[in-house]
Every structure is written in C-alpha cells, then in structure tokens.
Amino acid sequence: MPQLARRTDAAYLDFVEGFRAYILGNGANFEQRLNDALVAEGEARGAALVDPGEISELVRAWPLGRLRDRLARTQQEMKWHAIRRSFDEQRAGLRAELERWDTSGPGRLLLDPDFVYPPYLNVHFHLQPGGYYKDELSGFLYHYGTKVFFRGDNDRDELHEKLVGLVPGPADGRVGRVLDLACSIGQSSTAFKRRYPEAEVCGIDYSAPMLRVAHRRAAMLGDDVTFAQRLIERTGFPDAHFDLTFAFIVFHELPLRIIHETVREAARVTRKGGMFAVYDFAGSREMSPFQRYHRWFDARHNGEPYSQDFCDCDFARILRDNGFEVAAAPVGKRSGGAGYMANWFATRV
Amino acid sequence: MSEISTQTPEGGTPIAGPDPVYLENPVLDATVRMLVELSAQVWIERERRLALEAVLEQRGLLPREAIESFRPDEAQLAHIKAERGRFIEDVFKELRRIPVRDTQG
Image (cartoon, rainbow over all chains, first blue to last red; front, side, top):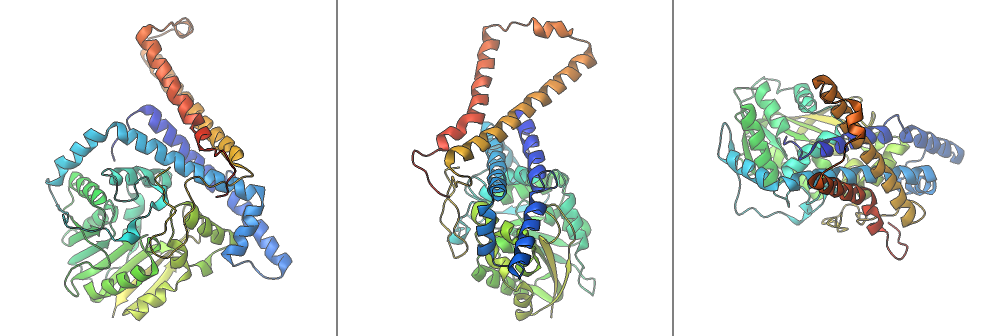
C-alpha cells in the first residue's frame, strides 16, 4: 500500500489502531460488560433478549453503552480523516502511480467505459469518504482503512492467505478457473493464484478505483490475475465457466434482492461439482445479545445498511434453493470475538 | 464527514446522519471526541520524540542541553506555527460540529 505523507500521519493512525483494539477488545471490555448486563436483564425478564430493537433501547439507556457508541464512531471517523488527508497531499503522485500500472503486466485490467453504478451501491460503507467508487483513490483509502481495521494482523495479507487456504477445492481436484466475486483490491484473487498457479484467476468488482489498485498490487507481486469491472449479480461469463467461485465479506453489503441474484449467478457460472466458498457475517441466530446490538449499531452508524437483512436471512437455504449443497462450520475466533464470522462451503449439484 | 448520506438506496436500515448524538447533548459528544483526538496528538508527539532521541543517541550528534537552548529562526518558527495550527485544528475541529440547537442522532 502507498506510504502516508508524513510520519505524523502514521503515528496518528497507529494511535487509532491501538485505540480501536482497546475499545473493541479487552481493554475497555465494553463487549463483555454490556453483554453480561444484557444477559442478566434477560434472566430478570424470564427470557433471553433477542430483539435488536429491544436490546438497543436498553444499551442506549445505559451511559456506558452510549459512551461505547461515541468512541466506536469516533475512531472510525478519525481513521478516515487521517487517511484521506494524507492521501490528498499525495493525490497527483498517486494518480500518476495508478496510471503507470494500468497497462503494465503481468495480469490485465479490464475497465468498462460504459459501466453504470446501480443505485444500491451509493453507500458510504464503513463511513469511507466517497464510498467504494466515488474517489479515484478509493482503492488506496480502502487498503489503508482495512490495515487499521485488522489492527495490523493483515499487513501482509495474512488473513486472506489463510482463509483462501481453508477453502476446500472441488472433490475432483480440477481447478482450471477461479472467480473472485467483489474482489475489491484483489487480496484473495492473488492468494488463489498462488494456491492454483496453473489456473486462470479473475477478480471482478464494480469499483474501478478498487480494480486499479488490485491490478497494480497483483502486477507488483508478479501475479498473473485478470481484474474486470463487472457486477457480481450479472457477471457476463458463460454457464459453468468456473471450477471455484469465491466471495469474501460481500453479501452483508448487498440488498436482499441482490443477494438472491448473486447466488443465482454464482450457481449459473460454477460448474457441477465446483465449489462456491463464502465468508461473511454469522447469522443473527448465532449471536450473543451484545453481538445483536453491535449489528444494530453497525448498520446505522457504520455504513452497513444491508447487513441486518443479511444476518437475519437463511443464507444456507438461499444457497440450497439455487442448486448448492452446503457444508458450514465456524471460522473460529477472530478480532471482534467469536460468533461474528461464518463460512459456507457450497458444492454445485 | 459531511458526504455521508442518510439515504439507504434500496431497503436495508436507515443510516444515521453525519453527526449523531450519542451522549446527553452535542457538547458532551464533542468533548469526548476532543479528548480522544488529543490523546492521538499526544501519542504522535511521544512517538516522534522517541524516534528523534534514538536517532540523536545513535549518531552521537547532540547533547541534551542543545535542545533546551534551541531558538528557531524565522523559517523554522513559521513551520512550527503551521504545525501548531494543524494540531489545534485536529483537536478542536469538533467544535464546528456542535449545532446551535440540540439534535438527536
């Protein structure tokens, strides 16, 4: 990722990273303390609390809950404030850097000059300034933003490498083509290329700024991956074209209608016996009371307007209804605590 | 964060506006933001001083009393004042976000 303009910016974001870990982790211990209180409240009422509206009324009535919300929002705003200011200072140079790599290989960048962004994408996900596509530097902003989000644990794409490594390939072992849906800056795409060096790997996304950074990053790493600007619900690829189709934390950022359309499209382009692997938020039914609150808060105050609908839907059933057999298992504990993430490994039948 | 829209394009959950109020009033919210911002600025200074002291020590360049007796020239002074302005803006920009009338997020 590009360097920040100043050492001061790096120190500022270093603080935000540490502060984020403190308020969301065991430092301030908000999650455990508020969850304990919610569990106790449920016991007092004779039934565990499950309704997000009821839970949110409680949490927001408690000073500790309101302060936690204030701090959670503040660290996110501080992160973007510092990243955008630092990249704004280097805007001309970063623009030139992207232009320099657009036509360099290995790999290809295929942007669609007639691409129309559907209205449902007009969201400032995670409060990122300009959202995912309105700023020419959205890809760089996103990359540095996720560095802070993952608290330094993904600086060398360790998380993507690990999750891609956990995906079971098709039972027949044949992997000639891989599709990375909503690939953003292509960290999973390149991980797949390394796992299957002989395969054609294609990452698609709607965001041209993300794809330009994805291509630059892959080319710099020497990975031959194609990045193309396409909608994941209408990819334009032939039927049964891919042996392995992948989606990393995208479904919670889609309206329900597009979730259904995307699964239908994944079923169309994945060959019989092929694998459709999905990592995303866990369903509401598996969440603790505080995790339900966090989802309620995140949807409204962290630019995740569609996430509640995804967590409330029966995603495994949507997969089955579209011709997949689903094996699911918890991913295990990660930042934010157990229960936030899940995976669906679905075989096309 | 003025670009953040309250619109939700298709279904989903209504998004909070650019300046939701979490605490009893906007002044308290701004006070907390300023406190966190100030902590960031303090850390920046401490990190830089640690780096600087390490470099100076490594190179054997500067006795400690030289820092105490340092007087900036005009250009250095202008730079320091610009940095001071940036520092004040970072910490106190929250004051601009307090509305004249109380609002709820």
